[in-house]
Length: 131
Image (cartoon, rainbow, N blue to C red):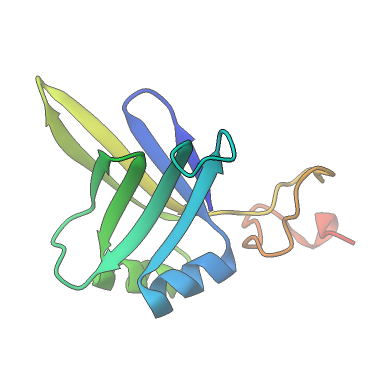
């Protein structure tokens, strides 16, 4: 799972197996380590909740946790929909933008990244299928 943070926005990108795990187990989690110490980690988690009414995000203790209603996640997973987007008011007229997306294979090959579990790119026709 990839996390992109830019200004007041969070963008999660999930591979096919991660989407399957979110639906089957209700969560997918990753972390970035800044040192060998467990205290020096940024954890990020995506949860599917049966009780959630909206997509929401929270942060505390070095963790970013985004919760999505389980029914929305299940519908997204079984369709061609690219993502789930939402905004969350954080005060002072500012909104946090949240996007949860399927991670597509790039149209140009990348030697530094394994994309074997990424979703097929909808822009990729038979004329440029990977070898």
